[in-house]
Length: 347
Ligand SMILES: Cc1ncc(COP(=O)(O)O)c(C=O)c1O
Image (cartoon, rainbow, N blue to C red; front, side, top):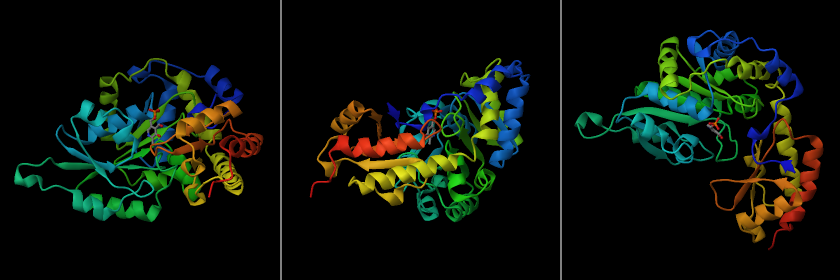
């Protein structure tokens, strides 16, 4: 099976397994695990922040950030299809008592004016306090699209002017940075808090970080314990994170090149692929023009030995490249997918 459902599918490489086996460990909950501490130091530096806290998942990193940046009853603004709004089981409401307000997005992005227009007049005594803006970069639901730096800069200026906090769901921040040829810190430093996932493009079996100021990370460590994320000898998995920061950052460019080649190959075979969407490691294929439903398309692809996954758009499937997808896999997928889906496109 060629596994293109998600970049979470990677298995630790032999080098990463060796790093895991050799990890020095201690009690993480007591702050005594040297490998976790080193990973937190390195991640903070990478993200352009003063400190970072290691947690099991990016969902927990996001929820900790929301918790420490807000008070119960506050309102958060986020793009309508963002992970925080639609894939975290209403966590902001359930865990932090937040009101969630969806901003219409284009390629996962929204404009400073939309934020300006959305801020509520809480002084009237009736409305919630609009406290927090969340950005997702790259944006999962729109197909791994990246925010241009100039737009982020403008958004950060507006947030600061309006006294709003700013969180970056940078689960795939390294993909955005590599695609744009900038250091992740150049993006991350503009936010109050940043989430980074280690188990997607970076190829770790588990782990994420939330980063921010020293003061905020003291709060983050408390929230991590509250949410059940304080661990013991976590250096055993944090070692994979350190290995990934050393060996798996620059190579993400290979995933992007493979996604582009896959997209071009599928488009050349007559499949409805929007090449402009392919900025990082996701390729979207709309099966509606082929006269197929999503479930029929996935059934045919599974039978052919290529796994794609569904998206928020009911007729769009996605193929995601990652560490365990080779050039040969891409060549084979370019043959198998159009065959399975019965390209050419019907007029
Ligand atoms: C943008 C984004 N944020 C957060 C997450 C959550 O990651 P995790 O599965 O580590 O909780 C994901 C996972 O797909 C994601 O795509």
